[in-house]
Length: 176
Image (cartoon, rainbow, N blue to C red; front, side, top):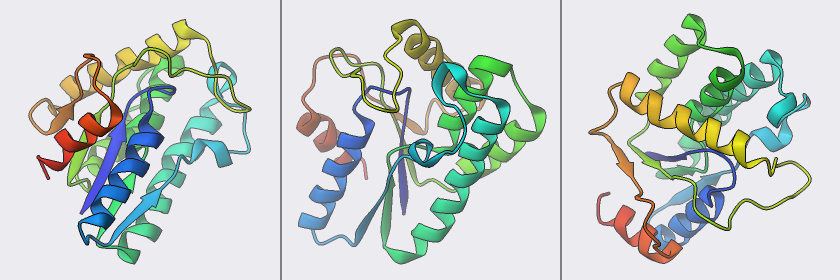
């Protein structure tokens, strides 16, 4: 089984993914964690990203998942292949080649969880942009591509209500 969280930066996806792995392990599930690929990217990120940046992130996400998924029964990814593509489209527009790759790879996930912007989580670190307009622009791409790819029925949408991380994880666990 492979589970991925999707959404723009600064929404708490990494924390949610970690929490899910912990809960799964407590239930006796052989769960593994795949962290954010972008932090390893040698090219400019965020508003300064290039096409090379986003293509590198998309391809390395796929490679990292392929390498990790056979090492555990359930792989939890704090990003999906759609994440890199949404950032790409936000800056450069659609690419038929990348879009075909992303669509095909999305079929490898057992569960996708869409995390919206949640207040108070966008914090400056050495990698992440704190530009709220940029965050919102990218976030809109996720909603757009969930619809364009026909994923409305298969993506678990976390509503913008004020749920604790634990409540969100419990909702996810109830659907696995």
